[in-house]
Length: 169
Image 1 (cartoon, rainbow, N blue to C red):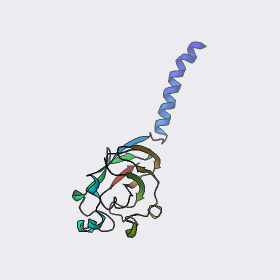
Image 2 (tube, one colour):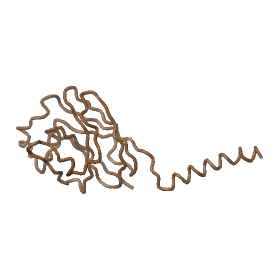
Image 3 (cartoon, rainbow, N blue to C red):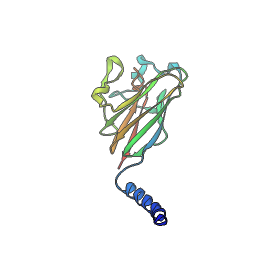
Image 4 (tube, helix red, strand yellow):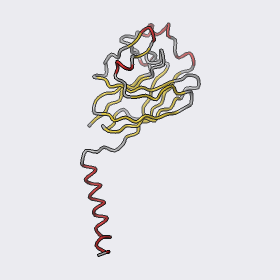
């Protein structure tokens, strides 16, 4: 009887793993996020409109003095962990996640505060106020669609600190 149990156990484990893999459970995905800037003069609120900002977004991202970089632009639906590091030597940054309908979607921008209205944007979570050189993490369940990752420190979003993540089935 013991030899039957030892022989059947690997088959049962293999069958269970195959069943789990095909039952719609997605493996967890990790996205490495870098928050960066070109130094303390990266944010010049008074001069932002010279870059042609419209709808609260940079018109020419090549002129951005700060930004968010991802190691992948597309992930599978399911649990996504964002490992976020602030590469700045001078500025505090954060990363907020919100769903968007399209790449050219307009987020609700509060001009007087120079930032996004996170509640109106439907934020799903954030890694808040990371000091220069610090890191943090956020895990969220994402369904297929588009998500914008942005820094909502005043002036940073309009300064170019945003990017789009695509989530597939």
